[in-house]
Length: 358
Image 1 (cartoon, rainbow, N blue to C red):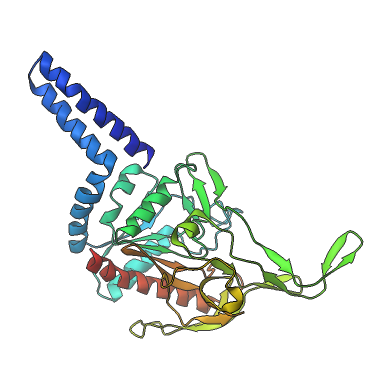
Image 2: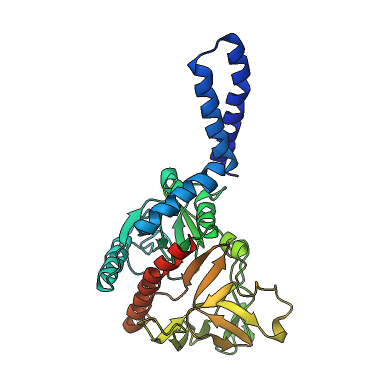
């Protein structure tokens, strides 16, 4: 329970507690106002108002007027050394560019949908998230957060998906970095970090040098509150050759034959979600069966079934995640365009999935 709901619950209880005494002193309009306000605050504090009243109203509205919402809280300066979003985010397009691209795709597909930018750091916006059929985070591994201790933005998004929403995250691990706009501070949400382990190395005085030109990723990727919540493991697929990090490169076929995009040509893959493990990995934490649904044909590597683009089933809703880097010099322009087109197509298709779940 958040701070706001705890506060409204306490105020509501206090107001209801004061009503009997007020009745004894004088009957009038004031006691009834206090009673109504107290009940309203209690309904909000317990979550009843949002979960059983507001959500039902918003679900009925979105069926008639579907909206794709694009989070637009973080500064976007193309020439900034902080990679546009004050973090190392591999995103390519700004919220304005995503808005224009999705709008044009919707017009070409003759789908009536409104695409708008939202400021999710505002509490009034978060309260009405269920108004939107799809929410897109264009900032890659970063997202705006208003309170780093309570993570209210992340928790609100989790609730949105839990009750049937579709949340889309592009270019790297979702919710890896939290940027607090008010303080202009970037926070790393990693609980622990597993980086690279040399397969072979040799000592040259006080310097350790790789004997081979290969480093293997060790264990699951650095865990964040989001990955902990959805129970999905993300790992590296990078190797080191000639002292440079090289991604896994391969073509990816789409599993859904109804999509216009049929294949992604030579995609550079740096991160993947693990769908299944073979026997040699049984000592590692178990995955939730069926939680990850790959958009592309799965890859088998080192005894694991992996994918870079996938849905995460979470409650009644879904997360659509693409881990493929877009603002990346080793990603071909053709692959960038194909990935972007695929995501736009999945977003528009997700509108109808979202409405059918309402």
